[in-house]
Image (cartoon, rainbow, N blue to C red; front, side, top):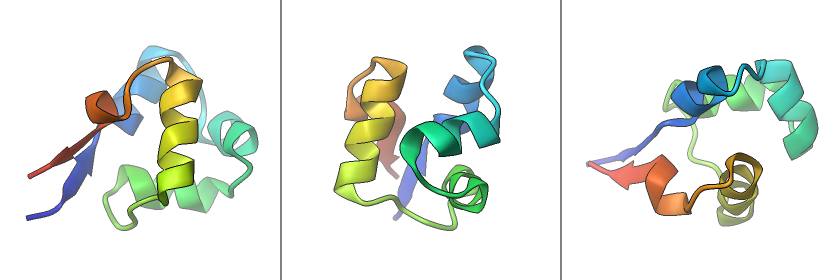
Length: 65
């Protein structure tokens, strides 16, 4: 069981680059890559920032599978 996310899909739908998102989240592009590729689960704070950035609920981005 692990945490899956839809960040890559959301980012592409909104035509946002990894660099743009990283800058807005105040993290490195490598962090965004790791999260999108399911190699790293973001902190609660970063998860909330990401949800707010896309204007959706955290549950719409992250799921437990």
